Length: 354
Ligand code: SF4
Figure (cartoon, protein in one colour):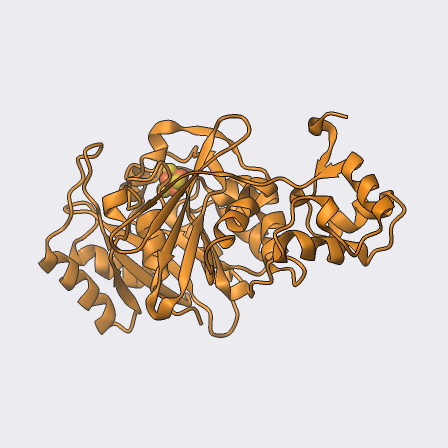
């Protein structure tokens, strides 16, 4: 039987794996047993699952396989950020960034699509367009691959792609990240970042509990329409209403990412409008100075403008944290990845999650 017809067990969450095994006439508890082999011990060969009978192992091997990602390249920044390049079976590639945090902890920024359809003006991915969605296995395999060599304390879905544009696969991947038989992450250790797909934000909140970050970047529809075309479909009023209703744990807040761009969104009038937009939302703001690069005419704001913007928010009791973009020397910083991610990943990385 060719591998195409086999089921990749890394595409299945606990429930789906249970159903798959029941279809083979196996007991339900086998699903947890097999998931622990895969995610906690990193096994990719059924032969190594020594507490399963030989007959069961050989039955599995004619019906299923366990995929793996091989690291094609790793680059390390002088600030300790590491960027991994993974080649997928069809030749597409994805990048994953491991960012060191204070206290020796680390955040892994993972991708959910090859390319992205959203065309945000400050992001290189917009220029490549969407190649395709990643499978569940391709999402979780980024975590498996990095965890083979490193501890990963927090995960942010902020790499290439818009996670909510690949919602079903992303939710199944989250189930595996959270499952005690899978990676066992607490729901507050994982954050999904979106550019603002409003119906999908609501659906996400209904289907699973996960931290939310919103890439905001503007305080008027006119500016946001230019920076983030998704705003033409879901304007700020609808986006902020969905944020207001997003289910959060008692100590959890939505993170609003705000890339400050000189003369575009960095005025005190913007800061004032931002305060109004955040009214009634349990949120905090990550301020990231735009990282200039050859592909963009946008400019980094002056230090004075950044400080004034931050102070305006702080003075009105808004948690506003200035974030440095990490990994700039290895093109793992804002606008340098093929995906958007790293400024925002870096922005999340120093946070102590509640
Ligand atoms: S910022 Fe995010 S949503 Fe926007 S184009 Fe880049 S990857 Fe896509």
